Image 1 (cartoon, rainbow, N blue to C red):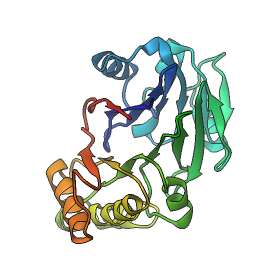
Image 2: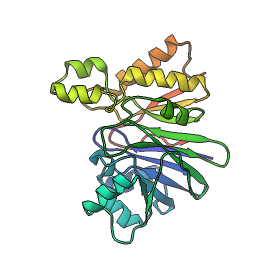
Image 3: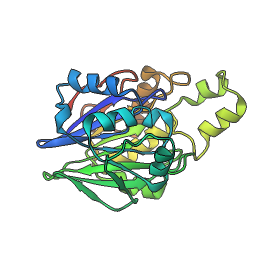
Length: 264
């Protein structure tokens, strides 16, 4: 049995819980430790059951709470060598906390969960997403800060039952919004973020290959809205002949608090 819950998801902070019957992991800690623990408590998740923290990359909206959280829970942290070095140089890894270097494509076992990182294109020192496989055959994925979906990302996500998929910005809002042009260009680049339309395209491919649940995440506060992201993706999927409630279930992860607990 797989359990999935976004705790926070957006450009201001990200953290996701994935669990099984024996415990769970966190992917990212981009808000304060206090906020993460309160979100876990609010969803009835036993903080003592958290076995590890996995990091996607070193940007502040993914690592803000790392130091205090690791010190509080005493769990190992898994991340790329570049991310671990970045955190260590800034004193964000408490003494004595186990660190584990991850490599894209190499699976690590945490309790009964098999966690496999995959490389993503994002303007960071290194960036990855994760798939998590459970003994009953369920597979879940966290895929945000994508820039674009290349063949490697799609291959990693193919066949997952549930995917947390980035839908960061609406192209029209970004184009007409207040951001300076260089920032707009960075966000829309292949090493930036995934738009609603590009998210819809990937969601359609995944659903056609067996994914049944898509959770849109990492929405920009300035360049998107939950309603716009959802309707854009839903409409594009409908145009492709895919029916919500029959072919797929679609959710949008809340920015500033935990989403619903999904049990698969």
